[in-house]
Length: 203
Image 1 (cartoon, rainbow, N blue to C red):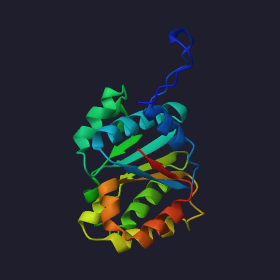
Image 2 (cartoon, rainbow, N blue to C red):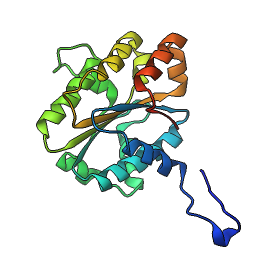
Image 3 (cartoon, helix red, strand yellow):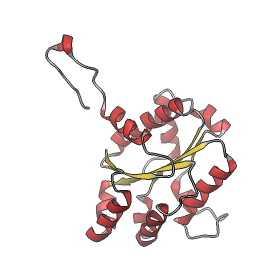
């Protein structure tokens, strides 16, 4: 955790946690854009996503959160969001939060497109279904390393930059740092960083 001190304890400024700082960065991601989030351990990532979802729902209650975990189970997602005081069951019932294992999402047969493209189709479907809502996608892209679809993923990331007609969504592409370093060559990694420009956050 980060702590800021000025002088003795009587003169301390408000100590903001790392999760608060990262949540602020994520909340500032504009609509129609996405960012790349690199994390090195799941425990820290849990704190970050729970804090972010809470802030997103408080600041923009009209949001739809689509959560697609890989290293955590959907039940774990619900538990850690609940630990943050989020009424997960209520939000799921009214459709404000959707928690789906990313493996199921990319294997969904309804969309007759390559598996990685199903993420974009799923997002567009939600945007079209809830025209008055802002769709926020949190997807752990590490899955594509384990199903050997890295080349498809690179194409997907590139195409995300070419979808100006969709303005009611934003996406957080999570990558475990170990997977990110293993699945891409240095050239590919640099290309990905270029796609995301200043929207790369390390947890």
